[in-house]
Amino acid sequence: QVQLVESGGGLVQAGGSLRLSCAASGRTFSSYAMGWFRQAPGKEREFVVAINSSGRGTYYAGSVKGRFTISRDNAKNTVYLQMNSLKPEDTAVYYCARRSMFNTGSYDGIRDYDYWGQGTQVTVSS
Image (tube, one colour):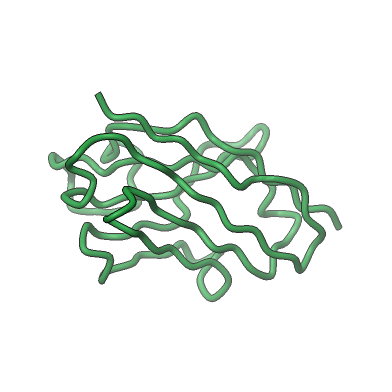
């Protein structure tokens, strides 16, 4: 059983920064791509960014490209999301997820992820 635990959310003013962390249990973390998704009130969960198992490949949603940066430390079983120049529309619950070995080939499909964290709230005030 894999457990993913997010941390680092909070309240920040527009233009500010936050760094989210996602700690994973298990010994196979380095074999899996990881992703971040978010869900705002009344909206569907949406893809934010993903990183491949080695950390050398990253994939961003257009809305966050140039502002957010994903990284991972396989020695610490942790994936990070650095969020800069935050906007009120970034307000959401942010989830990290493990990409399944059985996937469609894309990185932005929710159904390609098999384990999810409980989420951490990010609120950006204007």
